[in-house]
Image (tube, one colour):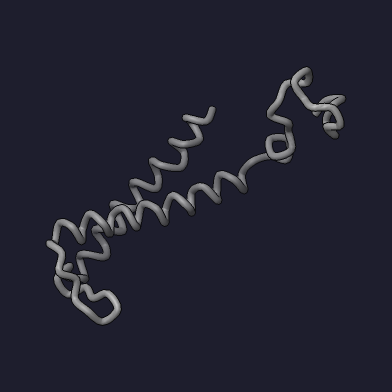
Length: 96
């Protein structure tokens, strides 16, 4: 289930990062990018690559929040330990 959730998060984020890359760099020349007023001395490919990963990270956060908010109350509140492995005093000792 964890692998499936990761794909629900990473794949759409990857696709959106690609779309954002195309849209941003269709209007912005990487050699015109400045950081705190100073021009970046990186190659175009380096700027494209770093921008892609920044866009991907932002989209991953967005997809992660969407996945988190889509969880049911049962999924959020269930105890990850089996009933026999729960410590004494656990409020869910009797069951989830």
